[in-house]
Length: 166
Ligand code: TQI
Ligand code: CA
Ligand code: ZN
Image (tube, rainbow, N blue to C red):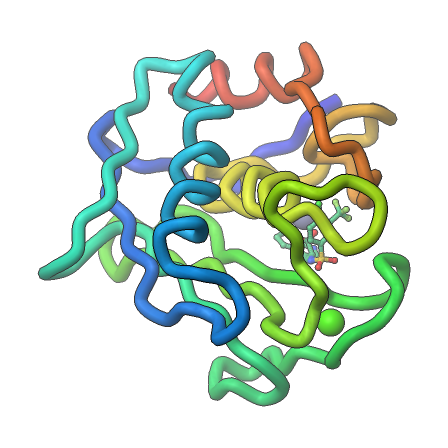
């Protein structure tokens, strides 16, 4: 079953920005993947999640490497198991939330096979940012095991979880 942090965004209008881009992938392509990853959740809820390039936003996204000052350093490039790809904080309407991606990982945007699907990892992290913890349902996006599926879909358990919140 899905599991919830216990906090959520009070409005269905949620804003985000990419405050730090990686060197390797082009900015418009990153923006496009982030939009698609949020759309995965928007499609099954009344949420409207918008990119906002100035001012304060609800969810701040950064690509970082190693120790990046938040007490939870990244560990460089490694295998998907036993290695951190990204992390996210739970919804915090007062201070905002963060999603960080480990810039040392070989994220890919289109190609299946080699590399790690940025879309899949982003959609998983955004699930955390919206209030979902891990699910124990195998095959759920929020199940804590990376599966290199280029065409992933939300599991009914992910949908039940997010719809319990929004
Ligand atoms: N990062 C962990 C994750 O996002 C960080 C984490 C562990 C975490 N426990 C948490 C974040 C509880 C919020 C709440 O799960 S990760 C996957 C997996 C990771 C893992 O880099 O290990 C994905 C990132 F396991 F689901 F495949 C993305 Cl998709
Ligand atoms: Ca890593
Ligand atoms: Zn997770």
